[in-house]
Image (cartoon, rainbow, N blue to C red):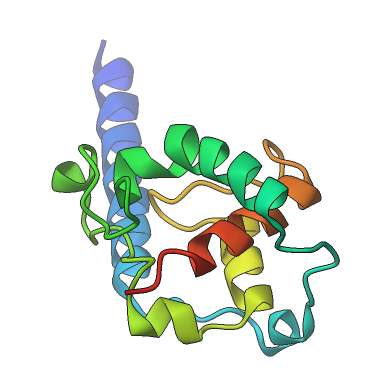
Amino acid sequence: MKTSKYLTSISLAFCGIVFANMSASAQTAWVAPASANNLKNPGTCDAATVKDAKAIYTSTCAPCHGAKGRGDGPAAAALNPKPADHSSKAIQQESDGSLFWKLSEGRGAMQAYKGQLTDKQRWGLICYIRTLKK
């Protein structure tokens, strides 16, 4: 019984430390590696690509980032830090490669989509995000 309480205490402390570290890392500036800036979108940002990407954005990204990409989706209220505003000057000035890397790798509450969306779909999302600028 004592051993069980001891292990439970250690497990809870460990989870607390891991959660605190995840939370702290999610609050620092999110900068893609320099090599990501060299990535170029291999596709075209034509109307069909943007249309397909909008459908993916609506189901996958909008719950946090909002329908217009302003970081005000219904799930955003519970997130800290808040989701990025895709229409902002800061996001619009990032390179396609940087945005692709972030979308692929994720961080904190922003999950990694490289295992869920194809490269083509993720590049399409970059095309769609470019249409959200203010």
